Image (cartoon, rainbow, N blue to C red; front, side):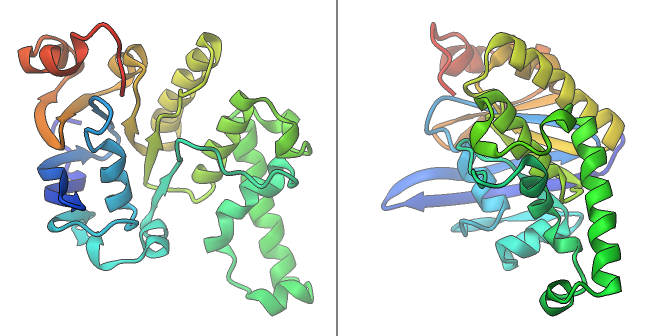
Length: 261
């Protein structure tokens, strides 16, 4: 992977909100097939970077390059269509829909027949529906969600809901998956299971992963490289071992008695 070309480049990105500098000339790049983590205290700018990559925010300066294309001229749905999917800190499933139905909503880019064709259930739309359903059933099996496929989201435990949201993001069949605090609210066993899933998503599905997470054990065990943010600026980047030994990181983040990401 050391010689791999970057798939995503964040270059000199700055943004401020009401006079508050949230990010200042932040730069990093992640390689194809890499698990790359962003860490830092609350307010460091981690989720802001996700929002800029997803085109939810427009930065004051800088560039976001994905496979050599500048994403800053695109709308959120166009970024998703390029192959960047995302989970959020707060779960937003359709409570009265089943797991299967929720995850199928993540395949909307793959429906080509159009609304009227689906309404009248033409042969083409029926074939399309079957193909997408088969894809989702395989995905649910991969994420150990098959037994929940017919249950409504509202009836699921928090940990399973988080996994369903992950499945919905993966339904896009992305090249890069942005995970925003995927272990938040999970118990130790659920976190352990999640770590195995994230590893499998990269190794078996070939999806590059950009991770924001406050669970330092998860970050240190899974990450190929880590970027550390502090007050909107990058203060370190490197392997987990290098980050753990970095004096600036220890003082700003890892050395504190409570890890608030």
